[in-house]
Image 1 (cartoon, rainbow, N blue to C red):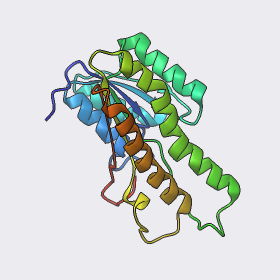
Image 2 (image 1 turned 45 degrees about the horizontal axis):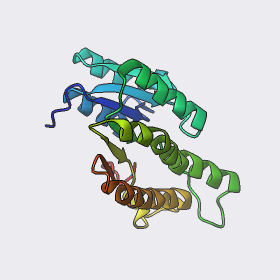
Image 3 (image 1 turned 180 degrees about the vertical axis):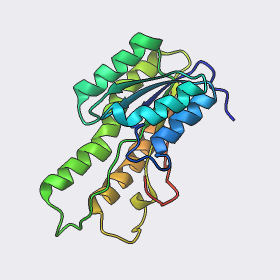
Image 4 (image 1 turned 90 degrees about the horizontal axis):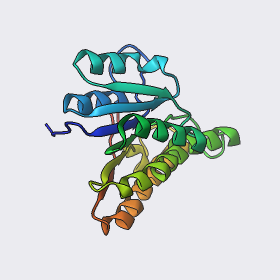
Length: 200
């Protein structure tokens, strides 16, 4: 177990699409809270975060959630500003928004491709775009985790070309950003969490 006592974790995408099991963002939020972190979440709907929020708070933790459009710079900035207004800092950022739509290059509609790029990839850029300057100003820096998938490295048995592409792009985004910030020795950036089914 890590000691995250008093650390502020901004988790983007901590809701549940169903009552069974746990999504990656929800599970991470609960795990962070169990290790002492204060959770501040952004999610498309606040209602779908009830299980996450209740689990954290019943164990004595703190979990605030703001309705957030992860594809909107204005919405992400509002989320970051709200977290700073509440806690004054952001020590951990977890970007976990994503969705897979079926299709190969010949069959996938252009609007589906564009929406996948926005939701899966642009959301990561926007989160880092607004949080990295905050972490740079903090003496203790911060840590960023960007959720990716094995589908970004190899074909996993079904056509989901936009998902494959965005997850591969996230890995390269993380690698390049980590190198850029390594010399500053204040910010740690990582990626590559997969679920038990091999998808995020």
